[in-house]
Length: 549
Image (tube, rainbow, N blue to C red; front, side):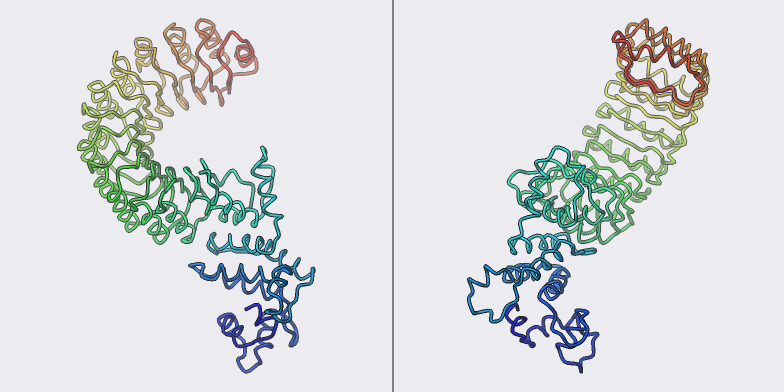
């Protein structure tokens, strides 16, 4: 090809570029058409640098990379040292320093939008063929730098970095696209490095089908290093998800954590995902499908995977998946048949209502249930759910460490029923979140007596957005003063408090100074005098408190 161009051999050139120039008048001579295509006025033959740009553009459009080696070889021939080696075989050549510099400049600035990131790497490899090592050296310096975010990476830098990481004998621990200072297109050029890393965080970066193909190839490779894959906030659509799921079902895939948060699932995608998971179930430990419009039919399909004897899933996040109480029936049926592995279940922001939680309790009270975290925030629950949960958890209380019932209208009577579980000697709860649960009187809700009767395990208490007022904090401080209280984080944001509450808290912390580290009192009318009392405790080495908001 290089010989044909430098010696004006039209037939081969015309065949190679025919798809690019079919819009031009076929009655014109080839050189006139090629001049028009290259944007050259008149009948001049295009210079070498322009010709190589167009050849590169053609190669970038290849899906399988069949022109990659050819284009690299072509660029290598333009270098004077290569031409000397070949002697007179190439005929007349054009190798002025100005032309070579324009070729290098064009490669560094080449736009590969909507092109496979694997093809983009070939741009960097063409630079290497031309003996231009500047980009390679800059990336080596970048990898040795301690302040990488300060360095703005160009697109060609990202292609070079992806290639070098991919080819490294050392497997990269984590590829997090948010930790690279570059453009949106630059981030996409980094994706081939996923083939040589253990954890890939590719969130919110507009992945296309070609990018999904790269990720799928990483899952299929032998060996596959990838154990964690985060693809949140990408509109992958059915076509991209289908490609990805083909990678999941590969026997080489050893993925342990998969997040498809907000990835727009259709009925077709849901079926494909479950099929892939069922075909290769034994490695996956964490699955996050939040904001995926899974709906009840999707959970029904997913349950077929959960009840598989080979399923070892420990964490399932279905936050905001448009679920109803029906989904709880599917989940309970699956989890009761294979209950011993699940440790984390998040069903928050779904309209489960009391009937759904009542169904879920059949799993919670199972002796084989080892659940440690249960999140049911904003599920349309009432006092009835508290009674169901309390009864179930009292019968099997020793495993649960975190309970989130925030943004449910539980009210004081509901929390009072929950306290039957909290005061159980076998309750080992470490985190309790009751954000915006319409709590008013902690004494009437029996929360303080329950916590005082079993104080030693709780580490975090969240009571934000409840109208507790100063009397509520006064009651709570009875618990904080207890020598067995080990609470480390307390949130009382927007609880209608005044500076009097600060005095109660200071008194409690002086009685038991060694544990509380974080205290959130924001959005309360505390006044400067109240805050100063607490700020003095933060400054004192005698108190554990170090984070006051």
